[in-house]
Length: 251
Figure 1: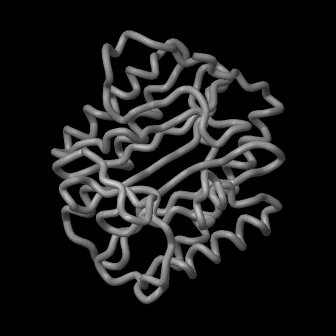
Figure 2: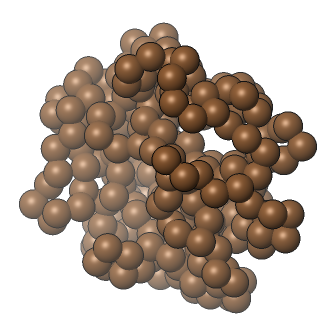
């Protein structure tokens, strides 16, 4: 497994690509409210990214038809924006990518639409908590499998389970690169590659309620859990600089 170590000049560009994503998520948050359609959100996201002199990197990626993945309620990831209008009590995951000067940014957040159920609040809290707990553990010498173990332990501590078969990933001049970083441990935690300065990757805990087995819907993209219940998703892009985790996708 060859994990690229980025130079300072590259990380500076990645920082801008990531900031564009963070700013877009911050911008779109005020539009996430009842009555707004997913297509309207997608259009606003695309226009905002282009204004930042970047491109929405998801559009056309692997054939994806929209600028953002917008996943409502039981759709955990890869939802295709459509005419559906948000309703009070929905939760909506928005996953955004940017392409800027040859480098990629990528982050996601699950939003509450008005007043949501206690279970949905807990799902969102779990996903966010798992993400930031893992980020705090990042330093050179820690193995990626240890991050996976930490993510799984945090998710299960809430009484939930991680989505299987989908994972965090390396990122840079490709939108998805080595290594793959599942939200659950495969094998032993003390095996596999170690984190080094200069590595850039995305962590993205995807949280299901009872069953982590994924089901892909007829549109070929939208991923739900086999239990059919609501899920949540958070993601940041991180660079390891001077022995510390630097979140690139903050606004």
